[in-house]
Image (cartoon, rainbow, N blue to C red):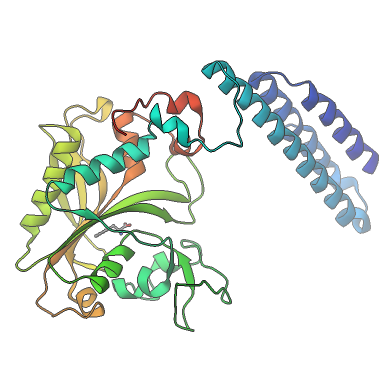
Length: 349
Ligand code: PHE
């Protein structure tokens, strides 16, 4: 068995070494790691291995798999560099930062984020910063989200190990650090730091333990909005969202709010919009985020009076970019593939 494993490894070395194109690459990858590939065959023949040898043989197969994966990853990088060089007509050094290319293209997520902040700056919103590493209090408790809420499960949120210490982010001994699961944490940070009137936006990265597929990625982006002022009502919220989406998508865009539940707003709503010019999604209601009036308990947690009033909303930046640009796979935003990015010519910077 060990001989067979070594033989496969040797064959893989030769085959990967000879790969010269992407099509070729996929073929070789399938041959060794695919459904009917050599490693699968090896795994199947584990049934014939004596019980006492199984752990060692299993481990040897695993080592072989990791080695082949490593060779394939290195080869893919080589192919990608070659493709990028052909596309750009010059040498590419993948170890250099890509800041220089901002002068030509702008990442679609950056485009959407900039548009949102520019549009709402016309209504007096400024950008507030948050932190990606948060304590449970900022991410959940202060936002009225009880221990029993499903979003607090280990299967949904990324928790740091209990004994982690992060300088400059103080926490209670009973809580843990998390990677923030939404930008709503910035509502709390802003309200603790400032007093009304408040109008802030906070675009940023959020993290959830989602399995990767065409519409899910474990880190993605949201933009939070928060306004706190005397006498604010649902009308202010609705007209702000109307303004945002009409400016973003164009005249004839409609916004709808459906009653929903988020622990930190009351009442809470799901936000949908509908537009005439969105390709095959034209004239269909599309869900784009959550919103509502800031809940009294959230105001209390920030030391505000009970009669404080304000609204908050959160929209998904990838989701907007996918709709606008007809992108059907979220992974494209994070692959840094020049062929994808080249389509987003700069109209800013
Ligand atoms: N934080 C919510 C989410 O991630 C969205 C939201 C923001 C809802 C603000 C209401 C108010 O789903």
